[in-house]
Each structure stands twice: as structure tokens, then as C-alpha cells.
Length: 212
Image 1: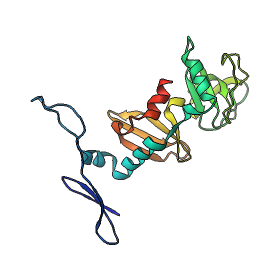
Image 2: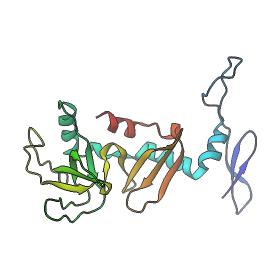
Image 3: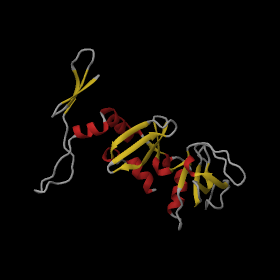
Image 4: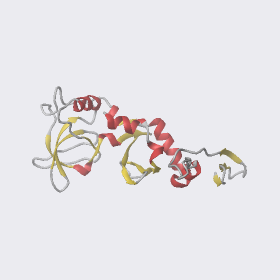
């Protein structure tokens, strides 16, 4: 396939026949107003140029099929407990295995850790609350749970609200690196899934996880 842009539409052309496969006419989306008081629209073509068609198709797929890690069994209970706590603590999932020494945590990918205290040089004190299989290791409080406690490198984890499972991959929405721009990447490989307008990914799974 080959893309053909015009001032009024984007057309996907077949390389075999040269004929159009699909043609899409952009519609304006709300933006800032002109000084004369009239709203100005940013066309879908401008979004295509910013994110690329492949990126937009991926963002649409993420929007429809991504499942928040926060919805996994065990993690949901933990987040409800955190929400009702007088001192809500940050909840992290292990994204790289850690073999700890004395006073340190040995962690498996997929385990969930509650951050108890931030240290120095990228280390933090935490307690395992959910194991890699999704089993909860606490009852009424995380502090009294049976999960191990110790120090761990925080860069080997990611905030639970930034993570999602999509097409069997663990993906992460990073904090914006520029105004109005969001990035989503494969946690394991670092491959970029999408980078483009934030509006394309202002969707339920990111927001729902953050609100929990």
C-alpha cells in the first residue's frame, strides 16, 4: 500500500493496481479560538502528519483492546485498599527481575510492590503485595501482609497506572515529554508503540487506572 495526501483527504493506494483502497476525508477537531472569536479546527490530516497513519492505527487499537494492569485480580483489591487508606502509597509493578542482596528485595517480573519510602541513588524501600501470579499477599493492611520487604532499584518498576496489556505485550504510557505529546512503548523491548497527540490516547484504560 502507498499513502496519498491531498488538501481534502488521505487515500490508501494499492501498489498492485494503483487504485484507491480507501479514502478518508478529515473532520475538524476543537482547538483554540482565533482572536475574532471563531473556533479554529485542527484537521485529521494534521494529526496524521504528526503521528503517522501507522501510529494512529496503533493508537486506535490500543484504545479498543488494551486492558489495564490495574484490573488484574489481586491488584484491584490492593488499589481499593490504597484508596481507602489515610496515607495512600504508590503502587508499582516489577518490569525487570531483581536479585537482591542482604536487606534487599529479590523480585520477579509481574510482582506488585507498595512503595514505603524513597531512598537515595534510585533506591526505594518497598513491600511485595501481589505475587507474579496475581495472588494477594495481604489481608487488612499491606504492612501486616506476608510479602517480603526490602530495598529495590525503583527503575526496575513502573507505576501501575501507566501499565496495560495489549496484544499480549506489557506496554507503558510515559509521562508527556512535550506539551500535547504522549508516548507508549513496549516495556520488554523498548519498541515505540505510539508517539503523537495526547488527544489520541485520552482513553479509559489510562484514566481509569489513574483514578483507582
